[in-house]
Length: 377
Image (cartoon, rainbow, N blue to C red):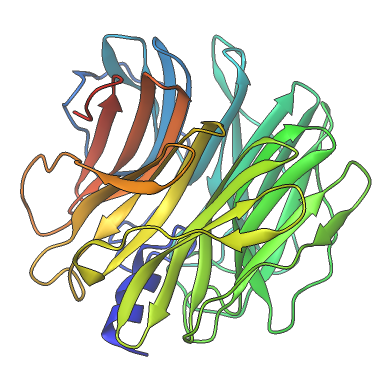
């Protein structure tokens, strides 16, 4: 494995080997620590969902606990800190918000889910696959229809063989939905839905955090069954999709990374209703990867990630690109500390003038930045 691929695998949500936290313990009570926009909390954020200018949720972990933050239009506040960790969040409304993850990072893990009903977070039982597992993404369609995707296997800090995991919420219970495993196994990192009959899940084939021969992996739900859909792979030994966002039956984006020789390049794919095709996207400094995407219409989509550096030496910097209906263009992104590692791991937009992106500063502080229609700050 090249050092570039080693870094790439380190920060994929389902395979973060740099984590120093040992997670577990009993659930903690809700907290009210507050920070205005621009301020940070301890550790990192892996997922964000934006409902309006005054309502957004971000999820991740603290050194020894899970972390859920809420934006009320003026400040970020800590809404929940307890057991496990969270890798993804999704919402259908202000009273139907999900956070998903796992119970342990460096040992056998079980899927972990919390639900927000507008007034409180509640742990919801989830079916545990044989061999354990984690959930990396969730999409809520309605109060009685949601999908969560991830990996069957141990915690993300343990390199291992893996199988994709898909679970469905029917308003009463979460249950596993079986799909054929890709050859050599695989993982699902993200999910997006436009309706009960149009759901996309993306990830990679191969083990969860080792190897050079991963390929893109896309599944689609048509209301009756999940079906694997052909997805492009570029030349090189590694292709992965980290994020997906769909706005209609004929418009969806999937983003990730591909390895060329000793460098990692961005990978951006589009669904037009018939096929997935690669769309050119910038790779600043000749080394970048995209971790998440959020589209609101055919002419507006954001993608975020990290650029520069061999194992972040000398630096890894935040990376943002925008789709205007014709091309992907790099957009200036904040570097709040100028430190060795600053990375954006998730993005969520409600329109042209409101989006949040979240991530980490050195895996020790959270990073939250906002788009107001003119600049990211």
